Length: 309
Image (cartoon, rainbow, N blue to C red; front, side, top):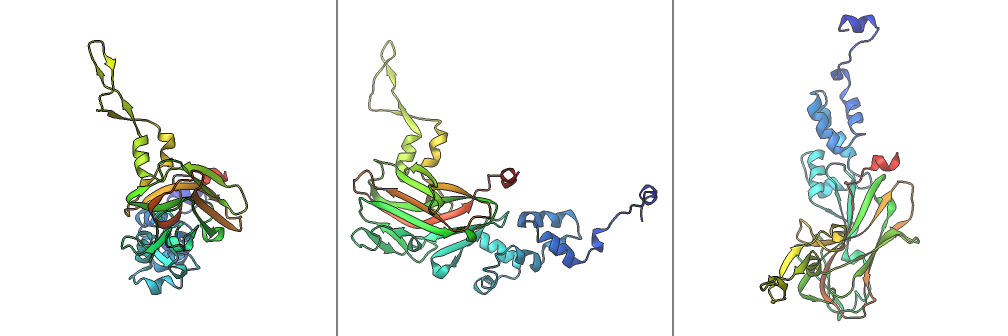
C-alpha cells in the first residue's frame, strides 16, 4: 500500500503490471484497433498485450479468420490486419472484396460487376466484359450502347458491421468518348429489400459536375459598362455545396465514385440491402462507361454514439 491517506481510507493503488497479460489482452480486444494502438503508448504494461496476435486476431471477422492467414502471409496478426486495410481481399469466388476501415476495424465490401444485376449485361452489342489491370477484380463491365441503363446489387445485412452508418457508392470510370449521361440524372437508391429505401438523383457525367460548379459571368465593356457576351466567358466557382454529392468524385485508386444512399445498421435487422443506379426515363442512347462495382463502406463522419443515445 502506498500513501498514508490512501491507507487510512482502506484504499490502495493498483499496478497494471500485476494483471496477467491474457487478462489485459482480453480487455484490449473489447476496444478498437485505434484504441489498441493508443493504449500501447499509455503504459508499458499495455504494450506487449496491445501488440499481441491474440488482440489483433480478435479484430479480424470470425467468418474469415480461418481462411485469411492462408491467403496472406504476414509475420504478425497486426501486420495482417493493416495489410487488409490497404489491400482488399477477394472473397466469394472473387465476386466480392473485403477490407477494413483502419481505425475502427469496421468492414468494407465491394460487389464486383459480375456480382451485380446489369440489364442487358450478357448481350455483347450492349455490354462487354473485359479485364483491366487497375481493377481489383478479374473482370469489369464496359457499356457499349444502351437506352435502358439499370444496375442493381444486393448484400446480406448480417455481413456488415453492427451499430454502423454505411454508404453505398457506384464505382466506375468513363471511356474516351463517353456519351449520353449529360441529359438526365440517374436515379440511385439504397435500402432494405422490400422497403422504399432512400432515393436520390445523381449525375454520372464527371464533365457535367465540373460545369455545374461554375457559372458564366459576362464581361462588361463600353463606356457605361454595358454587358455583352464576347465569346470569352469567365468561369466563377459557385457555392452549391449542398448538391456536390450528386456528382462523381475521384477515388485514390484512380476510379470515380458516386454516392447512392446511406443505411444505419443497428444490428437487429435481417434480410438484404439493395442498391441500384438507373437511367431509363430519358429514352436516349448512352455508352462509354466502365463499371468496377458497388462499394459499401462505413461513414466514419457519423457518430454512432449519438444515434444510440
